[in-house]
Amino acid sequence: MVDKLVKIYRLGGEESWILVHVEVQAQEESDFARRMYSYNYRIFDRYNRSVASIAVLGDEGINWRPNQFGYNLFGCQVNFQFPIVKLLDYKQRQAELLASPNPFATVIMAHLAALETRNNRLERKQQKLALTRRLYEQGFARENIINLFQFIDWMLTLPSELEKEFWQEFREYEETFRMRYVTSVERIGIEEGIKQGIQQGIQQGIQQGIQQGLIKGISLGLKLKFGESGESLLPEIESIKDVDLLSSILEGIETADTVEQLRQVYQSVSE
Image (cartoon, rainbow, N blue to C red; front, side, top):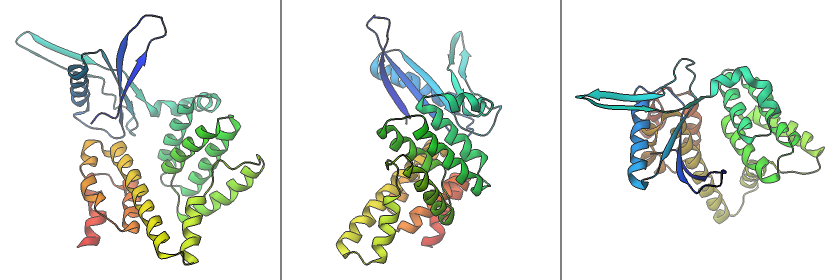
């Protein structure tokens, strides 16, 4: 499944319709270049238009840089080459990222911070605060702040106690702007509502909303970390109604090294 396919128009004045295929890959995969080639020719075959395939590599292997697939058989030669963007390369360009008004600079910094703080949650909280404050300091529009924060919040998950500390410190910072674009309303509202004994019908509505939100987050996480093999778990996961178990699966995506390890998170409960 292609991660993103975009139709764009050139600025030179000439009329031209091309397709840009962006593939996000979060872990090394021996067959990745062949898959890029497969996606490229399938898109071309369907639309009969030129296709630019670009790979965004978010893995931790600095030397893994697949950019070509081909073969030569009986004089028939295929040589498919595609550009890559290696996110780890931006570790040496932090100053450039900090100064950039491009929203994708925030996305890259959040990704790098998630890798760097995997085993240091206190540092992760500090980086999450710094990145969220930067959204205001860069002067982003309200909608951009909300959307970018959702990505930061998803990438830089925290244990409950550190999460509470994060919101307390950030609310104090946010008050200086006298506006609240980013709030913890969803978390706090659900928690306090349950404690106060909200009517059963409302509780069921909240429960369903949480379940759907968790499944969406899991779906994105599976695609980013495990690619097609991860997405194969979705039919099983979508049948799970237990919100706590879904939360465990979402957290497990970060620590699991393989799809099978992640499957054990929910299979062990059901046995």
